[in-house]
Length: 480
Image (cartoon, rainbow, N blue to C red):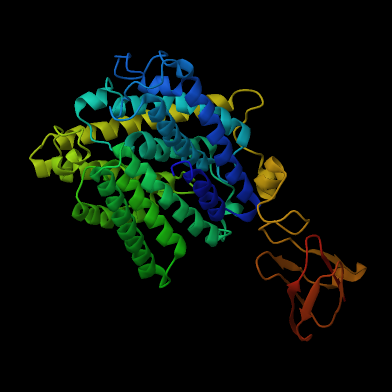
C-alpha cells in the first residue's frame, strides 16, 4: 500500500504542472524510487536503524547490505522480523524522496536530482529517522512522540523541498503568468491513490493487525476529510468556486498532520487537528511569496507545516489509552490529556532541531552538487520555455505526435508592404486572444500557414484581427 503512493505522487505532481513538463515529474518521482531502493539496501537501513550504534545521531554500518538482517525482532516491534521492518521502512524513505524531488518542478534537471536524492537520504533522512525511531536515537530517548514520520517524512520532505527550491531559484516570470494545473483529473486521481496508500502508511505503523492500527486509520480518514472540507471552504470564500485542487490540497494536508499523530490520539482530536490543519496550511501557501522562494508544489505549506501541526497535536492530545491498543507500548504516557506537561517542549525541541538540520544540510547538498561539472541543477532559460519533457525526457505525458505543446501563445510575425512608412506602429498582443491593431483607413489582409482570422470593419478606426485558429510560426501580411 505504501509503495502504491509512488504513482500517486507522480500523478499528483504531473497534474499540478504545465503540460510541457508533466512527464518529467512522473519520471523524477519514479526514478528517485529506484535510487532510494538501492541506497536503503546499500547502507540506508543500517544508517537509520542499526541497533548497535549508540551515538544518538546516526547508525553505523553493522547492517550494511542487509547483513545480519533476517528473523530477529525488529527495532519497531518484537512481533515482526527485522527483514520485514527494513522493507516497510524502505517504502517510507521512497515516499519521502518522491515528495522532495517535486521541488525541481518545471526548471530542475533530473540527473542532478538523482545524485542529490542519494546524498539527501544518507545525510538527512537517515539521521532524522535515527533520532526518532532508533532505540538509541536521541529523540527516542528524549520521549518524542512521532508515530509515522512527522519529522523524517513530512518535515524532511517539506523543509528539504523548500531548501532545494531556494537554491534552484525561481521559474521565469513568463512561466508563472496565468499559470494553471494542466490536468486536474490527475490531481484528484493522485490524491486518492495517496489516500489509499496512506492507510498503509499510518495504519501499518502499529506493526500488527491490532486496534491501534484501526484507530490510526480512523484518525487518518477523519483528519483528511476535515482538512479537505475546510481548505475548500476557505477557497470558496475568496473565489466563490468549489476548487478541486483546493479540496485535494486540504485532504493531503490532513493526511500529513495525521502521519505523526494517528496512533496517539482519539478521533475527536483528529477532528480538531483536521480543521486547524486545513485552515493553517491553506494560509501557509502564502509564505512562499514572503520568502521569495518558488515552492511550486507547496511542499513546505502542506508537508512541513502539516507535519509540525501533527507533532504539536501529540503534545496536547496524545493519550496512553490509544498508544497501548497495540498490546506492546503499554507504558508510554501521552501528552497534556495524560497530564504529561513536559511533552510540549519535547515536541517543540524536536521540531526546531529537525527543521534547522534539514534546511541547512539540504541546501548545502544541492549547492555542492551544482558545482560538480556536468551536474548543473537547473536547465537553461530556453529549455525551461520549451519544457522539461522535450529537453530532458524526449517523451510526453499526453501525446507522441507533433502538436503544439507550448503553453505560451506564439508571437505572430507581421509582414508589411514596402509602403509601410504610411502606416503607424503595429502591435501584436500576446495572450489567449491574439490581435494586430493599427490606425489606417483601408487595408487588405493576406493570411499564411493556415492561420484563420476574422476581420473587423475597416474605416477611420483601429483594425483588429482576432485569431480563431492557428499554429506556431503563422504569419499575417498587412498590405495597405
